[in-house]
Image (cartoon, rainbow, N blue to C red; front, top):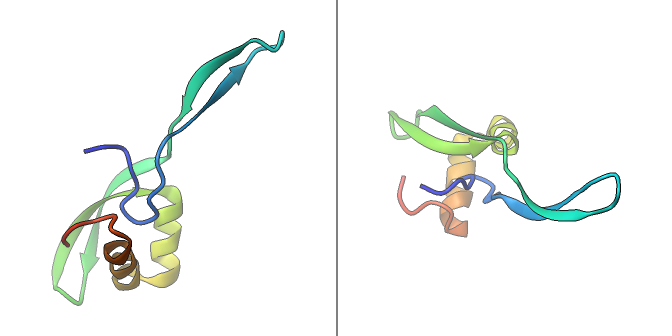
Length: 80
């Protein structure tokens, strides 16, 4: 599975590492990704998701049901 947040859709970005002498070398900015189990009371089961730190805050704010519905509509997850 690729390193993409299943709630927000965040993934790694590419940029430059710039030294003191301003030499530029390509590098990757990885995301802060976690594998977490969430209890989904509407379905009475546990769901395992790859979620970024921003995705965790979004689940705490909006609730798991709303976030999963939004991720399904956005095409970030296929089935729950």
